[in-house]
Length: 267
Image (cartoon, rainbow, N blue to C red):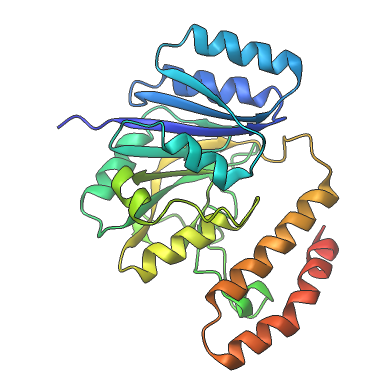
């Protein structure tokens, strides 16, 4: 059976890497449709996007008032008419042939299932967020391992706790069953959230080392202080959301004031 895949791309002042991302998706025969959620771009890029969509039958553009990454993906997903959704960052360039292994990994995975690929930086190194354990407060504070990029790559797909939202594939019905991304996150951590919800629903999160993409990273024209603020708010939302017992909720509230400080020191 032929599988259809709609690529969902949210862009906000991304810069020229967006051109590489979209051209790679346009040229990939396994990508059957592209929905671009345009959260805001300068006039020159706006004009280029209009021309790209006009010359690309499988692409369409959705103009949004910048509701955030997750909300942008959700809005784009509602326009998709395929059985798979590819969530990909606008500064991420897919490697041709990457979708086949991801689709195959999902075929035998327990629903709701999410398959993440192996993303590389410009030096050819695997990025630290591609495969991770489930995000918990102790791991976020440095008590225990969270990212798994330092481990040797597995020979094939393996279950993990979380994958990056920069590049993953999900069955449309599974994405809908999960309610899509939690739009309470403006940017960051929504990927850890949806992975945790998939696992708690009895589903699967799979890392697929044979599915590759180049990730430039940090191309959006947004001040780093603003990004850090959003990340701190998202982490606070996540830990409050998944804190279960009263003691855990108390510990979370005590730790939250230090999250922003820790992020600033890490920078």
